[in-house]
Length: 60
Image (cartoon, rainbow, N blue to C red):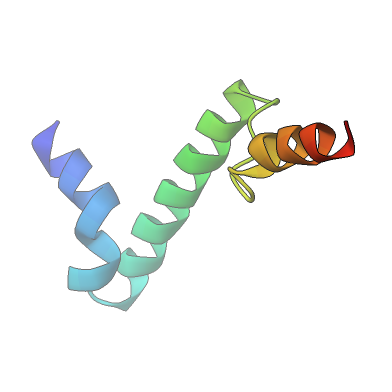
């Protein structure tokens, strides 16, 4: 379990060419899967909800 975690987190920085791509792709796949579990979550702009609320308050 620890080796798998190290491979996913540090593999692309430490391992040689064929394995570094596998590590990066594995991490990207896991990230996309986890983001897919929360479809309403927008990681590109975490302040979007707050900005909308501020705009609504300014309009009042």
